[in-house]
Image 1 (cartoon, rainbow, N blue to C red):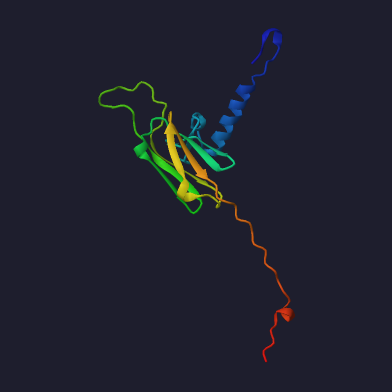
Image 2: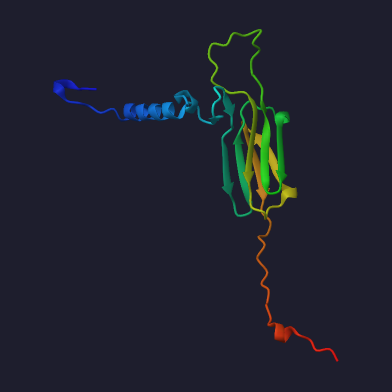
Length: 165
């Protein structure tokens, strides 16, 4: 783009968008696939897979997992903990009746979701608690005492030998 008096101006964001578009074209993906936060696309598919945003923090006594689930009924959420993996899965159902309403713009995503995170092995799996407030699921995973490795003493075979009469 040129400015007045023959001065060329540079549009940083235009260049970045152009480079992104070129990269996506060369990899066979479309730019719209990166247009929504909290969504991922499976390679080669044109429809988005809804993946709710997640935050993981650590307190002195527990790990705290916060998952954004606005519009998801609590009965449609399943939380499991197995072999150090915390899995949150469920479904956000369509919020309108297509037979009674005509949609003019639909930007929210619906459908099934599944998120799994690995936690350290020293947690109290039987004391995990979950609650929801304002569309955010909060899971508190209490820590157990961290196991410290036990030191073993190795003795020489000559010293460990016991003579029998």
